[in-house]
Image (cartoon, rainbow, N blue to C red; front, side, top):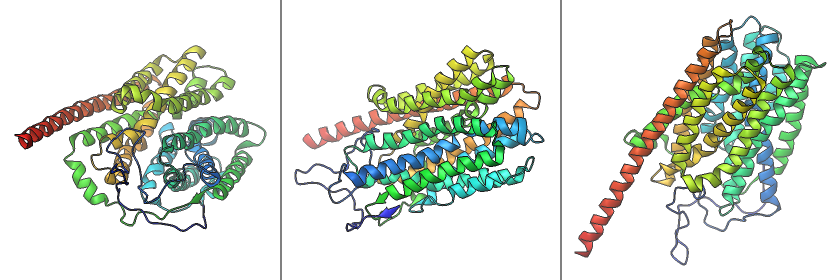
Length: 443
């Protein structure tokens, strides 16, 4: 990402304009929360702004979109390339990659998206049954690089947009969903085609390299980072006494423990249940198309339901569908499960950041709270699929990991319900206390 020639100005605290209205609203909806406040007017468009958004879209397509396509690798490694390893050991590759996306994002800051395609090229040199080579290249290397891509490409939207920020962020985030549709189709045809693993991964890396090069040329920063960085220690101390926030973290940990099971295993599950290989290759694509639709429509739905309510519906529904994976045995059941799970999973992903904003009383701490929440909850995703793989065993006993993933996901949904109950009670109490203060002042 290069920098424009216009003068840079540092971030400042929210200030009032001439009419006395606050620059940063007290509203905590998905539409209103801001990551930064600027002392001057946002461009709200223009060539540089939309080129930057397009570059961020491509980076998300190559980063998170590739990570969400690990189900293709899970299937290929299990059946062809790492046949001496268990499903649990193979799952550690994808779960570490997924975890590092958010964990590395805490420290990525202004770092650029360098090294991602290097890790892919290194993966293409991995030899069959050499687990450590694939783990280091794909699990560790690509995970770190994806994390370096993720946060900068989201936060750069705030350099150009305030009124249209929701629209811009929705467009950028849809890049990961589109990538999760494109990459599985391409990888299944490359890995299982004439090119084979090495040349197939190199072809994929070349495709990603071109897109990331275009992304780097398109994206331009406009403002300096905040003068005072987020203090995670102070924010963490405040979070300890915030019951709704703690419930949200616990709920996120449990839910994400079961969340990635269909994403990693649905293609292998379809093949092992005797469905056609051609359809099984597209089962993950169907899930991710539905996921993309959910992300686009989530903001509209949340305006009617509220963010906490939508999260509760999404998590409990996804947990029930995980339990429903026990009945996956036909093409129709695989299609219905993929479509429905993909949609509710997409709603959850889209509402994660708005939910943190809703539970953050002081929006100046939003970045720190978001980092703390994603980091701790991410441990669920780190351990979830390896546990599911261990429960699956070499005999492919599918109902056991389905029950495990479903139960922990529903448990997460219940914790989100408790979170909402405590949060609503606190709001009612604060409103009542405010009314009493007004009465005391008047009297």
